[in-house]
Image (cartoon, rainbow, N blue to C red):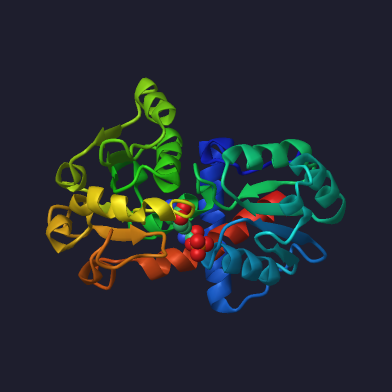
Length: 302
Ligand code: CP
Ligand code: NVA
């Protein structure tokens, strides 16, 4: 049976652990210059309704390194833009390619594509989730802190797609997650409730200082996500107290790492002194998208 990655909830804990372990192996092989081409003859279609640097490039490079090829379908460049049904597109692509990455607005679009495709569908970001980013961020964290069970992770800022994916990760793994979001900008209420009902250590607050106290990982993201450009000015005012700056970082553990999925806005959600400072892991974080997604592609398409 084909498998999809629409949210992190599509995986179980063992599968997440397996992918993280495999990504570390593939990363070390890559560093050694060792060729590994299990996807020779396979093709990945990449439907993008929003811009992308990291997701697009890391999936394309990942497919190439695994011996396969990819086809980038730019915003507005398929018949989807002229209202060809998602279900029909799913059936047609299933006759040509071995897997699809889709970046779009509604999570329902990704679900519909997966429901009608006989090939694996990977969510490359929707308004609600960004599973590939958070799973590869777990790889970045693991490289520094082996023991996730005793890890305290903070999310500071918008309760957006990234925040939701962090909650889904916490539903499967044992780390403690503190989310500091302004009122009215909280993550998915159902996910928060699910975490709380199942006894997971997921805590929501409006106080960024409380959220980062004693944590080993601080995460943030843009204040206005793709598709929210019209709200950017309002959001800049609302989110001002949520900037990750040196004063906030001081409250975390001295060994704390700072993550940002990028693109970043220095002086808004993150101060330049932090993102360009010694505790920032953002470049390793961006690199790890490649290694994690190669493990994912190998597993889903191999
Ligand atoms: N972090 C991330 O997904 O970046 P892109 O939007 O550049 O793909
Ligand atoms: N929350 C951001 C993430 C970008 C990778 C957005 O959706 O635009």
